[in-house]
Each structure stands twice: as C-alpha cells, then as structure tokens.
Amino acid sequence: MTQTNNRLFDEMARLMNDAAGVAQGVRREFDTLFRAQAERILRELDVVQREEFEAVKEMARLAREENEALKARIEALEAKGGKKAKVETAAEPPSTPPLGK
Image 1 (tube, helix red, strand yellow):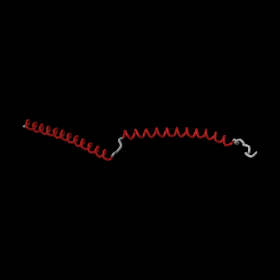
Image 2: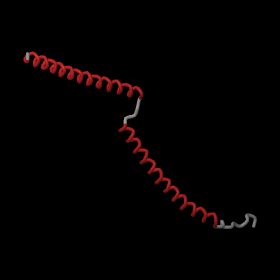
Image 3: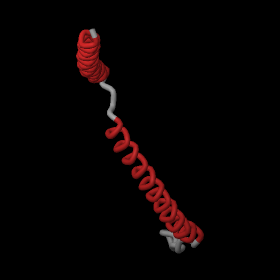
Image 4: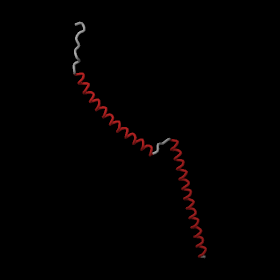
C-alpha cells in the first residue's frame, strides 16, 4: 500500500507540474496577444513614441536658445544703428542758397 500512495502522489505532483507549465504558456500567450493588441491600438491612435517626443523636445529647446541669441544680436544691432540714426538727424542739413539770387 505504501507503493500505491507514493505512485498516486507522484502522479498528482506530475499533473500539477504539467498544469503549472500549461498555465505559464497560457499567460505568455495572453501577454503576447495583449501586447500586440495594445500596439495596434496605439498605432491607430497615431500616438508619438517617447524617443520621438524627446527628440522634438530637444529640438524645440535648441530653437528657443538660438531664437534668444538672435534676438539679443538684433537688439544690439538696433541699438548700435539707433545711435547713428540719432546722430544723423541731430546734424543740420547744409543750407542751400535760394535759387533766385
């Protein structure tokens, strides 16, 4: 009778191992199907990937910095040009003799 009990327990343990293996396989299959479905939905929604978002974010930061630098250059040139314009308008134009004299 000891032999029967051991064989019965061995058989139950083997069935439980097989069931656990099947359950893991089902889970892997479910994960794969779920991931594929989620990726399909995201593609249809035209959602931006993280890498693309980070790249565009960096490009925008660089463009802002360049824009600020160019703005500072323009302001400096305008200030420099504005001083010359004020000097030119302050000087009196040369007087011309009247035409009839």
